[in-house]
Amino acid sequence: MPELHPKLSPVFDEVVARNPGEAEFHQAAREVLESLGPVVSKHPEYADAEVIRRLCEPERQVIFRVPWTDDAGRVQLNRGFRVEFNSALGPYKGGLRFHPSVYLGIVKFLGFEQIFKNSLTGLPIGGGKGGSDFDPKGRSAGEVMRFCQSFMTELYRHIGEHTDVPAGDTGVGQREIGYLFGQYKRITNRYESGTFTGKGLSWGGSRVRTEATGYGLVFFAERVLAASGESLEGRSVVVSGSGNVAIHAIEKVQQLGGRVVACSDSDGVVVDETGIDVELLKTVKNGHRGRIVDYAEARGARYVRGGDVWTVPCEIALPCATQNELRTEGAASLVRNGCVLVAEGANMPTSPDAIRLLRDNGVAFAPGKAANAGGVATSALEMQQNASRDSWGFEHTEERLAEIMASIHDRCLATADEYGSPGDYVAGANIAGFTKVADAMLALGVI
Ligand code: GLU
Image 1 (cartoon, rainbow, N blue to C red):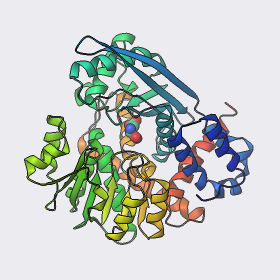
Image 2 (image 1 turned 45 degrees about the horizontal axis):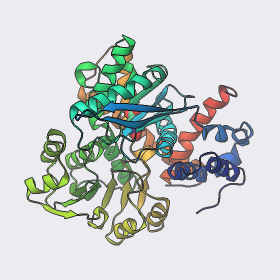
Image 3 (image 1 turned 180 degrees about the horizontal axis):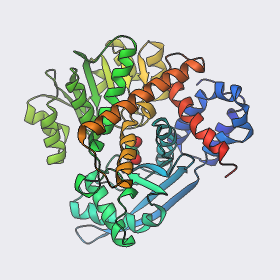
Image 4 (image 1 turned 90 degrees about the vertical axis):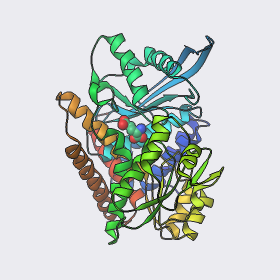
């Protein structure tokens, strides 16, 4: 592990001491702190005002009981979380994740990442995240609805369009946002659509929001390639995952002339040399809530149960599943197979060792907080439309998304240059994201 700046080392020790056992949060915090050395050397005022220490401590954390009844009439119990991390730039903004792996450390890592990501979008949104250890797999629509209603019966008092604006993440899509918004509307007796993003089009949603994370990721990857005179045209691409981010990344890669040869889920990998049929994938995943094995069967493509998606040869890899899914072994196999770019669609999917291995071998690396910021950026556009009671067309919204991704890309590069790490997107994203929040925190006083 690289050494931390002497002023940042005690900050990291404090994060570990104050948040015992929260490995993912420690990892996310360490990664940002490793980039901030040159910033504290150049700007001692940030350390003097304890801005970095304050940033590592969430403004508010809510943990609550979520009881609900399953279809058999049995009482079930889950735990709900909302970590309101930083509101220097705007209302807390970030998704809700429903997955059995969710605990406070996961929510904190995601909320922490969200601060910098949201700052990078250039739009007025703070950082937060929430979720539950509820496992939606195998649950009926009725069970999911009752769970969402119970979850919102507590969460409603903590959120609002000027306070905290949740959206989706793993396990939370438009259906769940509908149930959550419905319960919020019922309890508050207000049609406050700006309190949620990721809504359906007929009830305040934005065009392109569903596609935004995946599309934005590919726009970003294209800019990275363009910086060295390359493009996506004719490139072979591997995408991990097969959820919303993965599906729309695949779709955009194909629109731009690339060929996606594999994708995956937690059970296995499909290898499809002729290119994934994204319409079929959507039907299997969204229409029937099916698995990759069902896609492979319907398509007649090769399915490897328990396979490792990173062993499939490709020039570009887009991890779009979950945290720490790409580790040193996977990274080594990407390097061996001649991969030139890894761009993260998921949050923190590449382990720190794997990032080092990729970069030591000359693979370009685009971190999630820059490359997957298109989702939350389009959420901010949804909030804009809600505030002005407007609804934009698809093309206009997609153009705004493309502009935002281009500007994030260029700012990462310019910032990396300014702080002496040319071409380093990790340093660029962390420093550019940080300085904007830190300046706002300084301006707002010790709060
Ligand atoms: N969960 C998404 C993310 O990781 C989107 C959050 C949002 O739209 O608020 O950025």
